[in-house]
Length: 252
Image 1 (cartoon, rainbow, N blue to C red):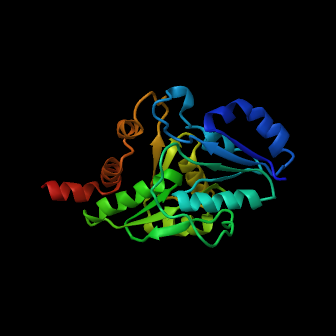
Image 2: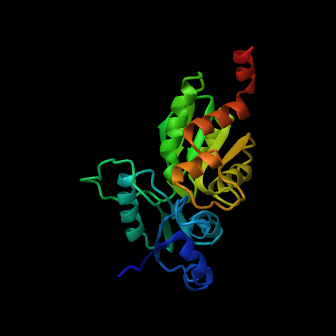
């Protein structure tokens, strides 16, 4: 029977040596299901699942994935159970999802390392991971009200990244924003930036996530507002970072 380890993101930190020595080196097909990944709210700084992307992404043979909603979560569970080439990790947040229907058919696993395009635009590329995919779509809607059209990618996988999808769009559009609910240092956005640099795709990149601070006790929505991770705040960051001339023209 395939080993499945269901555990808090923060609790897995305590088993890091075992992940490296007992699983990754041997390339064992263990399926990690990481609960409370991201901002958790009332549990305080010890239980905020901020670091699993960064601490797992650097490990050889590890696959990392995160769903945008309940339906994709269901399909990723199938993916994890069927994956036999080594360890694979699924991160999912605390709390309710978006209320999408679960799939009644099509229990096929996802192709490893393949993302999807959710909306298309020529002005900025939003590459989102997991729980930040729906906020990215909201950001795109806000930007469209300011005549800024965004392409939104649901990355699905932080490792391996879908370079065939992301790199050409980054080169074509020329402005990239990554969105994740985890630490920015060494996280998903860092992986996207590294991948683009390795492919000689040199474009401006804005990485959005949790900065180098501890997230304390608060309601998740309040924490996101404090961190600048609400859709209106993100849209304003994108406009200021990449479209300041348009902003100046409007204000004048």
